[in-house]
Length: 470
Image 1 (cartoon, one colour):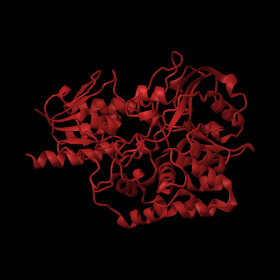
Image 2 (cartoon, helix red, strand yellow; image 1 turned 45 degrees about the horizontal axis):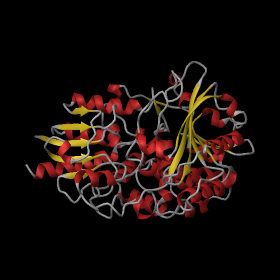
Image 3 (cartoon, helix red, strand yellow; image 1 turned 45 degrees about the vertical axis):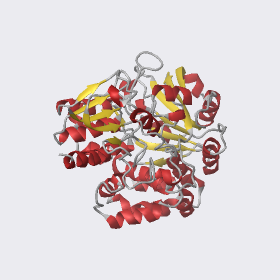
Image 4 (cartoon, helix red, strand yellow; image 1 turned 60 degrees about the horizontal axis):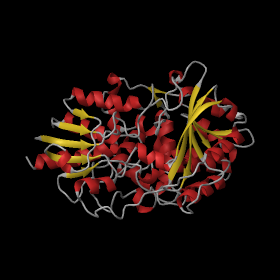
C-alpha cells in the first residue's frame, strides 16, 4: 500500500508529492492529461517553432516561492530569465509607469506627487520580504509566523479593499498600475484584502522580479517531476480518475483538483456546494513577425505589460466580467511577451505574445476584435505583426484543464471571504470531511499562481495525519 496518492500533476500536486517523498513516504501521482503541468505547460499552439504557455507565463510568485526555493530545481533544468523590466503599464499619451526591481525607479515613474507615497507604502516590507512571503503564503495554521509584527502590519495595510490603499495616491498613473496588479487575481477592486494582492505582486517584483522559465512554463513542471522521480515517486499520465476505486490503495489521497471534482470523485456529496467560481478570461496566443510596436518605450523592455487606460477603465472592465455578466469593451488586458527575455521561444527575429481580457464565467463569445482594438490603442500596427493566433475562451479553457470550472483560471472566485478562506470556512482548509482525503489545488490558500505553496501546505497536513496513524 502506498502512503499517498496525488490526483493531478499541476504545480501544487507535484509539490505536495515532492514534499511527501522528501520525508520518506511512498507517493504516486496520477494525471488525466498525457503530460504533466496543469496551468504550467508549454505547447506549439500556433506555428512550428513558436512555444506558447497556454496558461501561466510570468512567475513572480514562482521565483519567490518558499517551497520552490527549498528544492534543487535548477539541477533539473529550471532557469529563471528576466526581461529588463518586470512589468510596464503604458498610457494613451505615449508614456508608461513601470514596476521595476528598483523601488526608486518604480516610484519615479508615478510622477513627483506619488513617488514619496509609494516609497512609504513598500518601505516597511522590502527588507523583510522573504520572511513576510513565507508567513503570508503559509497561512493558515501551517506554520507559526516568523515575524508576526511585520505580518500584522501587512494585514493592516492589505486587508482593506485596494480602493482604500489607493487613496494614498493623487494621480492616475499609480492608481492604474496598482489596479492592474489587483486584476491579476480577477478580483473587483473594492473586494476584501485586494490591497494585499496588489502589494504582494509589487513586493515580489522588487525582491526578485517577474521572470519567465527558460523554454516555457513546462520547465517548472518538468523539473518538479524529475526531482520527484529521483526521490522515488511515481508519475502516471493519461490516467483519468473518475472515482476513488480507480486508484491504488493508499493511506492518504491528495487532490490537485477543483472542489467540485474532488466531491464527485471522492463521494463527498455536497461538501463544497457553497464554493463559488468566478469570472473567466478570453486568452489569445500570438505568433508575431516582430516585437509588439508599443508607442511607449518601457513596454518594449518589459516581460509583462498591463493594458488599461486608467483606473476607471480597469475597474469598469472587472465589474462587467465579475458582477454585470457581460464582456467589457474595452477590456483590461494582461499581456506577457516571453521572448523579450527568452528568444529561444520563437524563430530568430520572431516573437511569442499572449494577452487575455476578463469575461463572465462560462461566456461563449469571441473577444478577439475587442482585445486587438485595445492593443492597437497602445501599439498601433499590432495587427500587422500577427502571423497566427490561437484563441481560448471559457469553454476551451475548461476543456483543457478541468480545474478551470467555467473557465475560471483561479480555480474559484478570489473575492469576499473566499479570497482568504477557501475552499470553505475552516481553519484546516486542506482537510476534507473524509480523514484520509485532502485537497491541495489553487482552491486552497494561498490561492492561484504557480508557486506550489498550496501543495506544500497541504503536504504538511498529510504527513501529520500519516505519522499519527502510524
